[in-house]
Length: 265
Image (tube, rainbow, N blue to C red; front, side, top):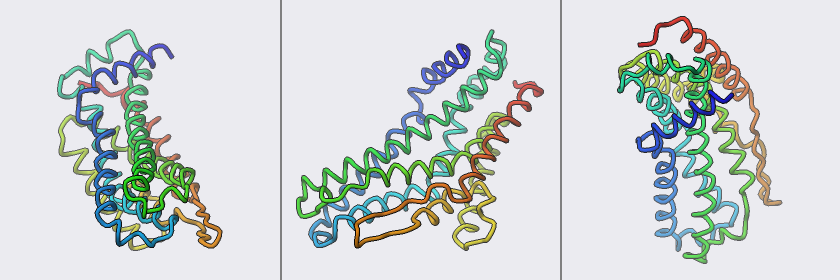
């Protein structure tokens, strides 16, 4: 456990000045800020909208940008950037020769990538709520403060986090084994496009394809909307989510045994 913690801290110090780390913070900030500006500019047109619908429009616009296509691409980039630090410096051999188990090194790298994805999605929740409430201050005609959907937003982004686990595990392994940019990123982009196409065309078995999970997650997210009572129910554990979790665990474990037997240069 001590080796894992030391390796995890090492990942933070190595990446804290990289684009991979700062993208987890800047991506949600910029997207939410742009939507905030857009809603502020159109505040007069949106003034008559019910608070619940305002939140759904605001949060939904952010999800449309982040969910189906940008989230898989972001996960692919994070998985690549975490391992690219070692590829670029050619330090894999020295890293695995340290008096720390390969399991600790491999696990710390994976969970650091997982942490960055979690951080990014958690900040989406925070900035969505913050900018929504700020709109009710700078544009009082937008009654964002008359409705609260913090719980729903947490569930929405928690589901997106779970739906991204399968992609993260696959891309993490590919980027660990291949040093060049084109192979892991190219495979990831092609699979992401295929996943979006399969899910958007409502293919019956799209939930079995990891790269379709974010799109499927968004499509199956709202199980019931009762506007009369002002409630919105989020269905987190649809059938795509357990598949994503199972794939992530299997690939993570399989990846470790591949790393054990492979001479990582």
